[in-house]
Every structure is written in C-alpha cells, then in structure tokens.
Length: 201
Image (cartoon, rainbow, N blue to C red):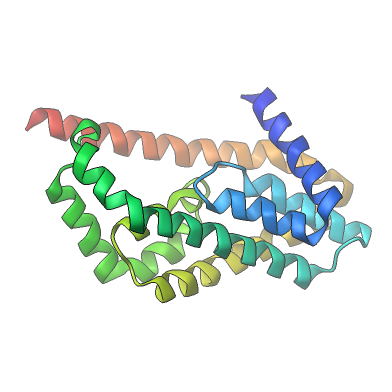
C-alpha cells in the first residue's frame, strides 16, 4: 500500500510540475471521476507550488474545483446513461434489487443536494459520490452546483495547508492516509452490514 501511495504521489508531482494549472485540473478531474487518485496528495503539493511562487492561491483553487466539476459530471453522466440499465440487468449479482435502486432514487430526489455537498467534503466518498447521483437521475444543474459548493472549500483548505507546510507538505500524506483508512473501514463495515441483512432475508 505504501509503495502504491508513493507511486501515485510521484505521478501527481510529475503531472502538476509538467502541466501547471492544467495538471491540477487534470489530476482533480481524475480523482472525481470515480478513479481513486488522492486529492490529499494533489492539493497539498499544489499548495507547495503556491509556497514556491509557481502558482497563485485562487487560480490554483479554481483549477482544482473545475477539475472536480469536470470529473464529477463525467461520472454523473456515466451513471445516468449506463448505471441504471447495468444495475437492472446485473444488480442481483451485487445484492442490489429494484427496492434498493428505488430507495437510492428517492434519497437523491429528496436530499440529493446535501448528499452531494457533504459527500464532496469526505475523503473516499467524494471520489464516488457523482456515480450514484447519476444513477438516481439527480438534476444535473443541482449536481454541478453542489459539487462546486462542496469542492471549493475542500480544495482551498488543502491547498492552504500545503502552502503553510511549505517544503514539508509531503509529511501530510501519512496523516491523510490514516483518515482515509478510517473512512474506508466505515464504508466496508456498511457494506458488510448491507450484505448481512440480505443474507438474513
């Protein structure tokens, strides 16, 4: 796992060092398109580039947020156009039936805004939140608006933290990794609970 994180970290550093603001945009777009490229590496390094004077704070934060929006909308449309038919055809193999699908749709119909907003502020969850929003056919304008609303403070916070840490930005990775691990354990526990309830029925 540590070796994988190191490889991802080097990829992020090379991408941003080579392409500047567009590299920040691209890295965050990948992270938001249900591909686990950690923003906890992308954004502190971006903050380090601000510390060095290579970037300006607000353009960097806007590039990161727009990357979130682009990647999030890509995942949203994948869920919208292909997710529901896929679940209807193969959902039983993942223990997802029509009742659960209907519940997901009702959740995003009633509380989609707050779900996307909070999801964008949570590690791990933020990477995948757009996909179920698309499957549930959440309004695309609301999806985009609340993605930006949640992504901007997250991006700005981690960039500022990286800026303040300066050359020590890399020391943040173990801390964020532990936080990701806690969120991951909670998600896995929820999945096991979901599976257990299905088998009990």
